[in-house]
Length: 153
Image 1 (cartoon, rainbow, N blue to C red):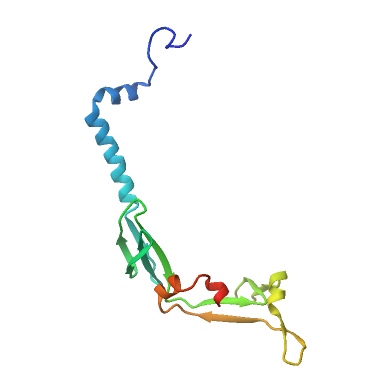
Image 2 (image 1 turned 45 degrees about the vertical axis):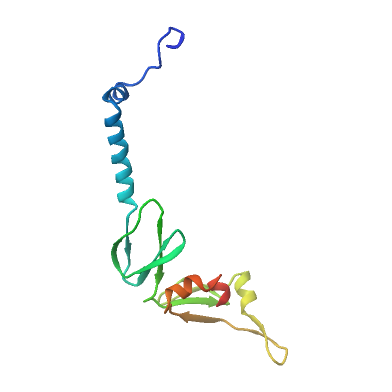
């Protein structure tokens, strides 16, 4: 027979009974402490030395952060996108680097093979492998003026 059938209420652990008897002020204080800890954990971010942080508030660009520790509005109000501006980026066409080093390893899959095949002006097919290297000068333009960077390049 359950405690409800005996006319009794639900049975709670001792810790929960103590919290419920403590009164609404202590319960409210506990909730506020939990919310404060959650807000503190989502209110800071770090930008690496080779990047800048683009701060978006409800999706609108409001700030650009330099490297270091910064603070933002918590709970997802502000969102930060990291953009590597001091790094040279690259895209490979016609092959894929598996492991770079002194003896680099490359792979050519089906997609890479299709990228490498080109039709020349005299209607011959050539296999051309190339690399595009680039830097990001304007992180705002990089993020907001192009739909798909890979396709654009």
